[in-house]
Length: 162
Image (cartoon, rainbow, N blue to C red; front, top):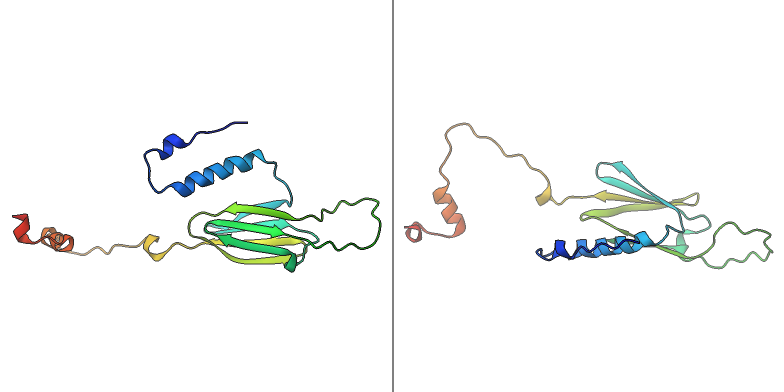
């Protein structure tokens, strides 16, 4: 088992607490064997992702999907539907589970679907308007001086600058 000390990275930074927590939980999860239920994470498009979980035997009412802050949690609590028969072999797991996924900033759940024992959760990255790239128009002619405009924007008068 390896342990990594990320404290030197965060010693001189402010506001990166979420990244520190994410690295800590990722290292804890790495020590645990990937368990039940099996799942896939795939890239559908440049800004779209899909998590597919094999949840055979679970119904919609047995599953709970929640988003809290930037964490997606999927839990399954199957009711003990004892069929009354005696099993010679019970290979289909019918146990409760809880699985958590850390989501990047601006990643939202766009929908979930349960079909043929597969739970699919669709995710999409939605960048706010302020973070999206924008085009700057190029004007023809001489460049305007911005010194006077910049002082007005900063709230300084020509008198203070002198």
